[in-house]
Length: 148
Image (cartoon, rainbow, N blue to C red; front, top):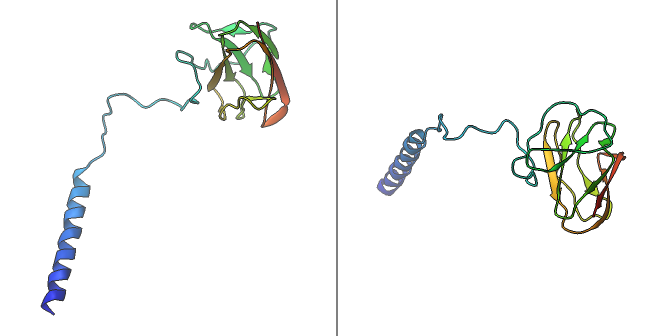
């Protein structure tokens, strides 16, 4: 009987210590850096941010301040659908639509994570060639990158 009481007392003491320690670790309510507004896919090039504005129809891709080529994804097309860049260039796809999209190369060599509205994903082209791609969420959205 004494051993049972001693074991029970030890167990209760351990539970009380755990409860006290759990109460001592208050969450940090003043983080050193504020959380990002929205998570951006891992392949997003440094210095690229979504503009959150609808693209204007264009046959030529825009560039951002870092020199990345921007292709807008709307819910009905890639704008522009065909883009020519130099070897070593980074292309950034910005989701200007209302649905989640992604970029999948037809040969299966590249697949972006899902790109929520107002987010971006990118790819650096290190070899010359023609790269056809589509959106696996909407296979009617197709595009081509020509690397010279």
